[in-house]
Length: 97
View 1 (tube, rainbow, N blue to C red):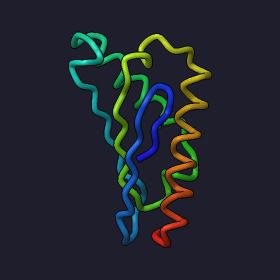
View 2: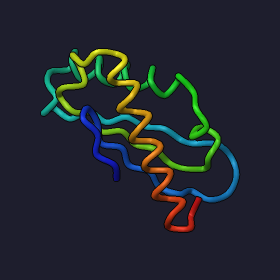
View 3: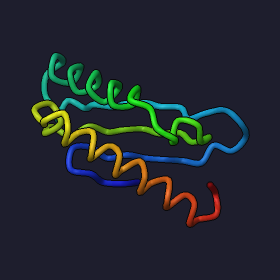
View 4: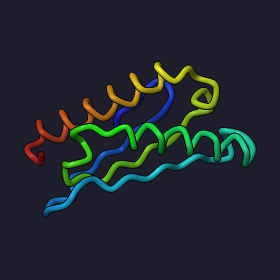
């Protein structure tokens, strides 16, 4: 689990081959359906941005926070990258990556 400013990212070593699997959750605490969907779309767009994490066999789940909906795009990119890299580093330290 890695806590960022706009999201909480959970990573779990999956083992075996293949790339990363990705999921997004947004609870009602984030806001109404329109806002939750906007948050999910933004996070999926971040994930499509690529990176080496997509080639690692891990499961990644992102829980969005309310602030994500209005955050500037560049700050989101930075927060997402930091969370993913920190999570992968922790998995590696545990001897699983």
